[in-house]
Structure formats: C-alpha cells, structure tokens
Length: 265
Image (cartoon, rainbow, N blue to C red; front, side, top):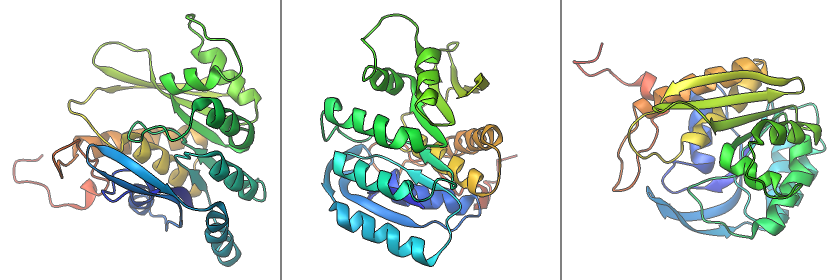
C-alpha cells in the first residue's frame, strides 16, 4: 500500500509506485494524499486531500485485504503526516518504507513545521528511511545545530536511534562519474554500492527506488538484499528512460517486457 500524490504524468507518486509494484509482481493498493498539477518538468501545484479522506481510503482497504508492506511518499503538510502516522501505529509488524522528500515538488510548508513532524511521528515507525545526503542534512538540523563537518554517518545513526531500523542514503560522496548509495543499520554501515552516473535529467528515479524496495520487502527479502535489487532495477529503468514530453526523462519500469530493438544485444 502506497500513500502519495496523484501525478498526471505517472513519473512520481501513486502511479509510479503502482508501476514499480507491478513490475516486482505485487498488487498495489493506493491512498491518494494530494492531486498534482504538472508535467515532465515537475509538479507545479498540489491540492491536498482532507485528512479524514486519507484515513477513510486506507481503513476501508485495510479492513478488506492484508497488506505486505507500506510505502509513504511525499507529505506536504502536517495533517497528512499525523493521520498516516496514526494508521501506521496500528500495523507495527508490517514493513514501512518512508520516502518523504521529492525534488520534483515545490515545498508546500516550511521545514520548520513539517520536518519535525516527520521526524517525530513517522521516522520512528519506519523499517527503512530513504533519503538523499542533502535531505538528511536538512532533517538533521531539526535536532542539532548546522555544521560544516562531515556528519552523514552520525546523522544516519541518530535517525536509527529515533526508532527506524535502516537509513538508506542516496548520493553519498563518491568518485566522479559514479553514484554511491549507503545503507546504515543499528550496527553502522551495512552496505555501500557504486553505480555509473547516467547522462540526462530524470524525474522519478528516487520514487522508483523506494517503491521497488517496498515491493521487495513485501516479497520477503531482507533489507540489504531488497536495497540492492531495487538499485539494480532503478539503474536499468533509467537506462531505458523515455522522453515522453519536453521536460525530463521518465524511467521505464517495464523495460523488461518490451521487445528489444534489432540492434540490442
């Protein structure tokens, strides 16, 4: 089950999550938290769904069907954070992937209000928090003073101390031409993976990654294995990305189902 915005393009949010779930052999359930207005350059505006409607969408589904994993995406207001956190508290045994930030969306509320709510209400309930190095820095400044020191591992471990099991940081410092992602657990760094940096500007890469991790956890994989499988899938989806409009490239989550071109190996 995914909580997120409805994106008309299908590059991020609910539609993108459902595509990634399906690619991993999972049936996706969706709870819409906002309606987006945008194109392949990004989301221009959001109309948020009332909290009681968010709760009703989720509760009706949860009373009807078992859920193997949750994914919570972008949450632009405190009301959405609070209502989803209350729902999650009733299902502590179900894995939860938290991916609350998106570069495709403009900030809807000040970090001063929203980030502490995410930290206090959702991070402690998460199985895995997916966050970029820059986003982790912003989140960490809700519990410490700003610093120019290299605090990435310290900040990740603090987030784990808040209650989540794993913190998966994307875009950690790496060599030129590479993208490095690092998974932290209660004992420290669990794994770090390097991937070739692909040319082009993409929309929906992080969404693909977090949704695929949730699907892999639903399929019974351990967190470390789920992360690696999701990274592989995301890299391949970006390699087959499509220019559907005049903006950014959209990952192709169904590249594996298409007939190869005659020139492909």
